Length: 108
Image 1: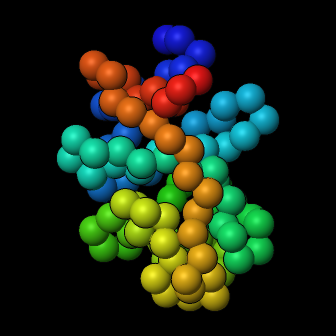
Image 2 (image 1 turned 30 degrees about the horizontal axis):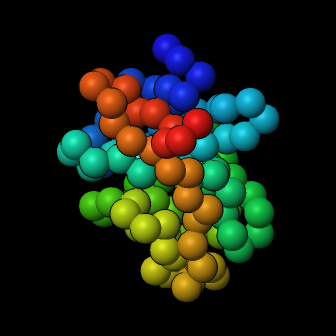
């Protein structure tokens, strides 16, 4: 895999998340069918990761992930918090693209 590659598409289960460590940064890759989104793994409410345990995310409903610490719920497609203490705030996006069977950083 190249430096731009975060993971294979198959590594991210459908309607789920995968934690990828890139340098000193944790990135959460979210997938729904053939669409992916990536964000810095930092909840904007209290600057904690979304997951309490490595690579264990609380996916609630379709394309929603809940912060393990304060129960803020974020949409996969735009990182917007739709419920909880961070309501109206967004996760910090990491631009990605699917190239073949890989999820890659855009413009890296």
